[in-house]
Image (cartoon, rainbow, N blue to C red; front, side, top):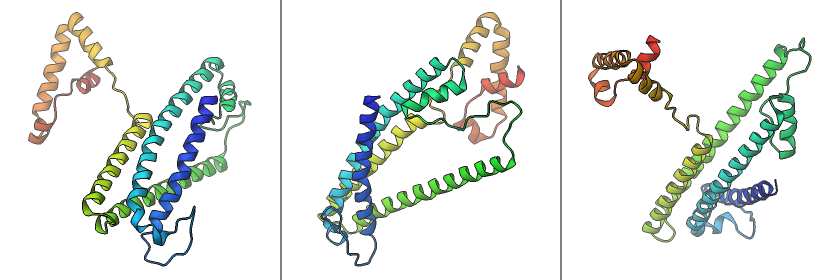
Length: 246
């Protein structure tokens, strides 16, 4: 828990660095004479520092990705420990997650079996999820758009040299790609590939070789009936054939 608190404190500190930089870079795109300062910097005198601020923001983002990965691993271990101690009791699992600061995904169901959620609760829950999804999409699209516009403006109006600005933009793009890959490695929908069917085919090849050969021959014939592009860029799918037969 102490390590998790330390990492979360470090993550919030990184956010506190990135947010002012993002605001300054966003305000620098507006063709208005905005008069305000934060930490001694003002938007009108940061035009020559945009490349430096962008490099700092990218470095912080790379460090934040590593910190988020470690936080994710610690939370997974704590969740697994809570599930083991709960021994299948959902209420106990939710209770054990609270001291770790891990909020359960959904609200607890009532213990009375004759109680169930009515249409007002389901409607409010759906509206809440829809509003959160819309807000998340709007914020993400806005942030990405501003980020891209800043890089385009830096390339169009370099403060030091065209080569330096181009190098900064390339570094920032690589940092963004790295952060996106790090996020997908933690939150990917399908991060693993099952080899169960390969084991089944290997077992069939030993015990039932005729069934194994028939499935692969049928998959090859089905592949030949597909279009020319599908034959060039695709391959036979014996797994789908086996699922259709079995």
